[in-house]
Image (cartoon, rainbow, N blue to C red; front, side):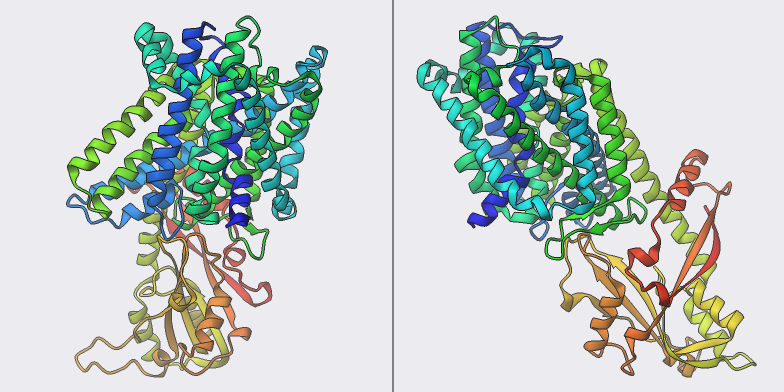
Length: 635
């Protein structure tokens, strides 16, 4: 448990743990700065404390994390739970899954901003002891980001053991410097009362509403608690939050409020002003390390969301490399790494400072909060069968908070909030276009392939005999009842059929993991459908239909799964799987005038298909025993 708690500190809490660097500063600076009066400061700190309490402690830690899919979390996993929900209206599950995809798209928008604002806010601490160094803040930040993305290909395994201890030190330091300030000015503890936040709204509703857009920065990263639940489990995350992270954050935010009350004219960077002069440079180094860890967690989260989207059929096959033999969550997706690198560096250079970037931060985060709440309420109603009255009451409280945060952040759209929304829109368009286009192509492919039973009838009654060759031929095809194009081509052109023919369908389940005992599923033999019901003869007897089941977080290793099937004697005749030849049917997609998708979406789908990863690599097929044939399918 201690090891898991330490690991959770290094991965789960990096984003929310570095929020004190910029959250309070954003409230009292920028275009919509709140006046640093005692009443307003107390009101803001009260809002920050209760936002953390309600959004993180109650909503995520106490409720949402209960909605795990076999221990896994994240908004796509939540959507996957709901896809099979029994609802009277058939369109409801589809609508809920669409909301999950939208939430994942908003996460991409958030992921592009988090590394930039985190690293910039840490390095800007150099300006406190030496204002003349302000000119080198951006170059240093970009250098840190370049190094951060460059090391992604090596995985987090080498430095993972350092993440937990560094973040543990970070939270202890946050708590200590906060406690020192509070010890000298304990009256700030009054801000814990919700009455101050309430009075802040009553006295100046418009200012308080706009302030919510910056207050929410204190809870950015809350989604990570749920998304990374599968790596550590719910108990370690809960204990780390309540015993260390929550108290440390509370003390630090209270202390920053106390400092602003004492120094109302000097609150440009209240986090670093809490420190004695000798501690400012060491804190910059520690904060930089903490923000790198926070950025690493967000990047890893983007990799994980991408893997889930691929497995759930919302993205084409991408090159996904596992960087650890023991930790399934440690993966590297080159195309996402390059895309994020270009986006993050461009954002850092374009905005130039964490203060300006804070105006763009929050819209995507609060949108994800709202969608997660909606999906969680749907789980509580449709899967847990909680009373409608109870779900409605809980939804009224949670959605009021989330919608308030989201609408307040809409005031940032003109000042930069359009950026994460634009990224999310692009992501949503790509995800939904691929999902729809994939359905159309799959239907058209099934028609072109024809029924497997008809094909076997044809070759069984063929005048010229089909030559039997030794060995195992494995034909991958999404539809087991259709004829793989590669099999048809092999028989019609080469006039051969292997001793053992395995037609294999790889099925990605809406579950994170499938145990080995449930990996392989055999299908009934093809039999003649005529009046006599006679078997189709030796050609049919040599064909075995198999479904290989993988969870959306599993690695789809086809040879390993077939070896497992052979060891368990699922396949007749004890074939030598280690010497099997794999046949792939790769189709070229041609745009047609058929209805189903707009022409521009068809062109987009075709472009995505052309850049899909090699299926042989995706399914871990051996290069020297894989044969690819081509076909043409209309869209």
